[in-house]
Amino acid sequence: ASIAMHVGMDQGQAEEELRSPALRLRWYEAAVALAWSRWRGGQDGPLRRCPPRGAHTFVLGTPGVGKTVFRTFMAVHILQHDPDKECLIVFDRSACENDPVILVRRSSGRLDVATTKDGRAVQAAVAQASESKRRVYHLLDVSKGDMNGMGSGAAYSRQFTLVTSCPHDKVITAAKEAKKKGGVQTSADRRSRRSGDAAQRTTRARLQPRFMPLQQSGR
Image 1 (tube, rainbow, N blue to C red):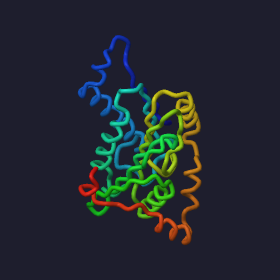
Image 2 (cartoon, one colour; image 1 turned 120 degrees about the vertical axis):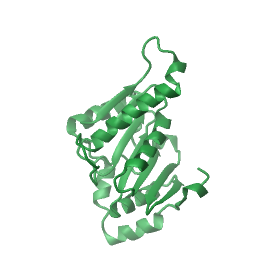
Image 3 (cartoon, one colour; image 1 turned 90 degrees about the horizontal axis):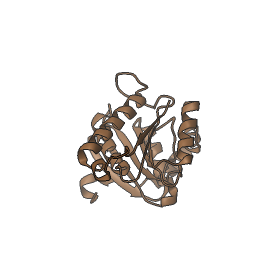
Image 4 (cartoon, rainbow, N blue to C red; image 1 turned 45 degrees about the horizontal axis):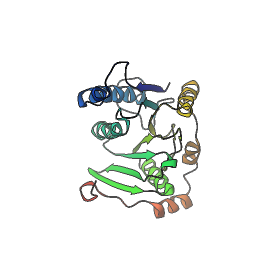
């Protein structure tokens, strides 16, 4: 089942205390441990190539607790612990925000980054990573309950998915439905299953975003 981890302030807890580095680090580490456990299917050992059914994770928290920064913390953990050291991390936002997607690709010991607002380019990068047997980690930061990302969408069956959001009825409903069904098939899931023919591979190659070495990207 999916996890809905709620991070918020206890009664009487000062906001400045909640924002302290020490307290943030504690919940960051707890959230990473929970997500990684679910991505492994609750078992010891390395990750599978694709996530087990129902392995996606929801982290819900009030504004200011550090959810967006947590994605960076999670990405560092992924880069350190991905079994093959070959992966693609998709930093995604709700489509309603119209923010660019940041793609971090680790391949052959290199760390490259690309940014794009073209959802087709994101989908092309995700498809290429999947064909190259790289794991895809989708870190989706939700705004206003909009679960549609700017890029690849929430393909729970093909991508290791982490959703961060303020508590919102739509997100809570999505988390409950995902837990009940063991994973909700989305349009992104269906697209990924139809992505194998030669014409589509040619189109994806043309749409690929431009990756640059991380140290040269200015990020």
